[in-house]
Length: 452
Image (cartoon, rainbow, N blue to C red; front, side, top):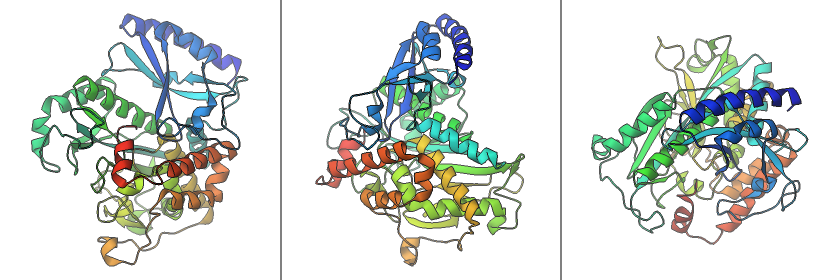
């Protein structure tokens, strides 16, 4: 980050701080997401926003090797108490928080003290991969689905207590929690988040919200903003929002599905082509690259031991390395969309969950897709029906350590992430697998469901 950029940011931040102060905003939360999938924060008074834009806010790099329980591991490049980074707010994303009166939010990029990009900054990694696609004339539109479970009472109690007994996808849940859901929609609208759908999901007390697609970095930013809005709103209304991959062992968990479409010159490459179900050759090769890399991508998108309690067959979790047209059991679901809606065709990756760092997810998926283009890949035949019943498709890794092995074998992801980020991710995955090595499924669920 150059001196000129910092001075421009300082001038703009002064204007933003004056506006926010006039609106009663007292503090700015500057967030980033660590390799364990937790959103970390440094906050500044609104009057200090210009200083933060010019000089950054200090933060130790050791958080790149923090685990879900706030213990630490180490890696070859990162670990220990030494060093310092600077967090710089992205002023384009600066948002007053409707569910946290008196606060605003901005995601942060991380640089070292000399102004060089921190090699393990997940958000800058997502930006680099987005630029790689752009250099090939490709843009991506992405969007995360956010699933969560609400409970009442003490959040740490062994047996969760749910505020509604309504059935899966049932209107009864909306009636039971009508004010909660209506006010959540109002908070998101006030933050200029365009909501596509909000509905009850399968598990007790579970809901899902999906929002309009954005550029990859913007989609990851929105995933953070939506989650923190749900968290703040739920807490203010006396409910506990749980984003962990599973809330109760043996039950259907929370997904963090990623939708994506590939575009070139305002044309959606997922349709009006000669490939499978209307895909263009470019779109097919990109999705084939993602499908090929899914076992390794699980270490990014299903990064917790709890993830593999969720990733079970016949639960719409996408437990098999296959694709299908509108098949909710396939790890990669292709959605052709209506013929008169050019923007509707897209693909959905179903095997990811809310423990994932969304910046790592979008960057790694782009990496895998571009590798598919480089290799000229094509998709295998699509799968219809439940692959668990047919018994012919390959299961995705069934444990974090197996996914980690595939991740460490991936030259594609290793090159794109770079040594410091790649090795810190691997260190966190290995340490979390060891952390829960002797835990029962229910102990894993209880320890992680309220952390993300």
